[in-house]
Each structure stands twice: as C-alpha cells, then as structure tokens.
Image (cartoon, rainbow, N blue to C red; front, side, top):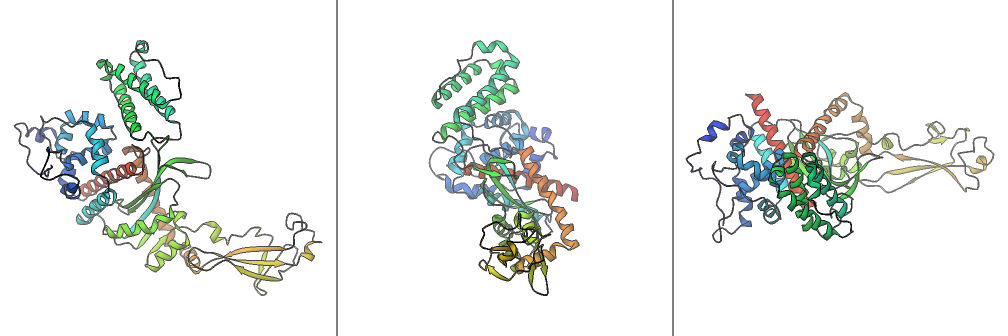
Length: 486
C-alpha cells in the first residue's frame, strides 16, 4: 500500500531545515523546480493501493536514486549520508529525526518497481518540458553524439573480478593497521566461484568486527563496493561477465567492453533524447530515433550537428525529406569517389573515359550495384589487356595472367552531391564548430556522475543509470540557466 508523498512534514524539528538548508542549495532548488508527483502517477500501478503494509513512497525511493547519481555514491554510503545530511533529508521530504531506509530497499525498488517503465524517455521528457515552460530552449538545433560506458563486470573471469575488489579492501585496511593481516582469512586458491564468494564474506565479517577501522572513509567505501559486488554477483551467478555488454570501438586501435549511450542535445545544452544500446551498435543508425524522440518531447528541429558517423545516405535522405539541415561531414571515401591511384588514372571529359598512366584509354565501362537508399553504385572501366602485357608501367598495375584490367569509382548519389555542396558553405563550417558542446556534456556525465562505468550488470540496469544521470545533468543545467536569467 502506498500514498503520495505530498503531505507536510509533521515534526517539532521541521524548522531546522530553514536554518541549515539555504535557498541556493541545489537540492532545495530542484525540489522547488520539479513536481515529482509524475513519479507516483507512473509507478502507482506497481503497488497495491489499498492492502498490505504501508510501502515507502515511490517518490522518495526515486529521489534516493537521484541523490546516488548526483553524488556518485554506493547504496550503503548514500543511505548513511542521508542519515545525517539535512539537505538530503529535506530533499527526501523526511522529518529531521526520521529513520532512513535499509540499503537493500534500493535494490528491490530498481528490480521490482522499475521493470517495464520507460524511465529514460519519461525523465528526459520531463526535463525538456520544464525547460520549454521556463523559456530556456529556444533553438531549433540538435547536437548528436554517442558516449561509451564500460561494463561493471569486464572481461575478467568472475574470480578475478572478486579478487580485485577484495584486494582493494585489504590494501585500504593495511594502510590503517598492517597487523590486521593476521586476522584475515586465508586467501582462496581454488578456481571455484563459490569458494571466492565465501572468502569475500569472511573478509567482510572480520573487518566489520573492527568498528574503528570501518569508520574510516577510505576503508568504508572500498568495503561497501565489495559488499555490493558480492550481492550483485549473486544475482547474476549464471554469467561469467555482464550478459548484455559487448565490445565496441572508440578508434581504430582502441576498444571497450560495455554499452553506448546515444545522445541528442539542444544548443542550450539540454539533453532532449537518448537511446542506450550495447557497445557494438553503429552511431549513425540511431539518428532518426533521436530526432523523433526530441520532436515528441516538444522540440522543433531544423538543424542536426554530428560527426561523420551520422552522414550515411539514409540519414541524409531522411533529413532532406523532413526539411532539416544535417551538419555532418561525408566520409572521405564518398567525397573522393572511393578512388585509388588518382595520379595514375585521369578522366577524359570529351571521351567520357579514364586514361591510364601510359596513355591508354579504357575501351568500355559498366555500372554495377543496385539503386536505392543506402546503396552506392560503381562505374567500372575496362582496359585492353593486350596493351597491358607490354606496358612499361605494368608492375604494380597489371597482375600477370589476369584476364582483365579494370578501374572503378563509386558514383555519388544525388543526396551525396547535395550534401557535398552544403559541406563547402561557410554556414556549414561555422555550425560544425558547435559540436564540442556535446563532448563537454559527455565528460560531465562520466567524471561527475560516475557514467564512465556501469553501476550494475545488464542493459536494464544501464538504462536506469542513464535515465537518472541525464535527469540530474539536465536539472543542473536548467538551474544554471535560470540563475543567469535573473
């Protein structure tokens, strides 16, 4: 049974909030900016409304998750801080003397109450609606990009992962009290996961018997990470690694194991849409979805700015059909016609044929490939191989015994030709310079809100993490822009 968390705090100590939580406190400002009743409306069907023990308000539980993201805390550290931090209690709509939840409630809330809820689109839509209502979003420009998040369980074996977390705890303890080594259980030497889990439980138990050590933040944080890792690992015992994470490539020579978050952001740096995929997905394939989600959220989109990953032919066609500008450079393979050995083959415009380095002209040409969206046709020029047999430049050009000698170039589509002309304009070049804004937003997500590494295993957990992180950065941006208007 639940009730909406809209009641006044009945406590003789409630006035303390006016003294210790100033008006410019970010959490106070968020409470005043956002009506969180939309969380209750969305999640009330997940609870029994008229029977059973009274449940913790879903609004309060969601606010706990939001605090976890804003301050990048573990569940245990989050609950502990909410015990004494008055700004946290104020934000959670708690009485100053009210007891906090058990950390396990957060795990249950994520797994039981947020299933089948499109939290990502709901939270982004809410912040975009607030920004539009406050007159913050005025541009008609979207900047798009993708950022990667490493899996919590990387490609190490299960035992290696747990051993690493246990080692971090031991090192933190040794820095405080090296003699504790004598009290620790004997390290696991088998290759059985259950044996390593038992060792971790024993290690945790020994350390928790020393309250003077566990009270030290450096030890406490590492211990909480180990405890959460053990609990989360039990939930995914059948998987040696994150079941949904995949290998993706950041550059030609570097890769990662995890997920991608594809973002669309307004020129005012408010994220207007996002999709979260496994790491190997192509960035460009998400563009149409990002545009449609932004429009559904209330954006009027006329210009899209992105890197070369978004300039594939289907995206060019889509934006042209919808009267939008796509400020995305074409792949050099397209702009150059995918030509090889350009200095060795020159086009004779009068004959409409290519001429080789030796001065021999092609004898015929043929067009290959299918027409249609995403298809590029190729013109293939054929040369007289009887001349190639005796040509002084045949080495490296003609393969001995080959039955034909050809030279091919890709044919630019009408869409590509138009994009090439647009790409040459000063307007395009100036607009392209604005892409840095979304790179700064990606950095904020990773370095201030823990988005560099997944907080749990699985795509579902990644979507929750992404939803709360984007909600947090959008609210912070809205507050900053509102303060600048004053």
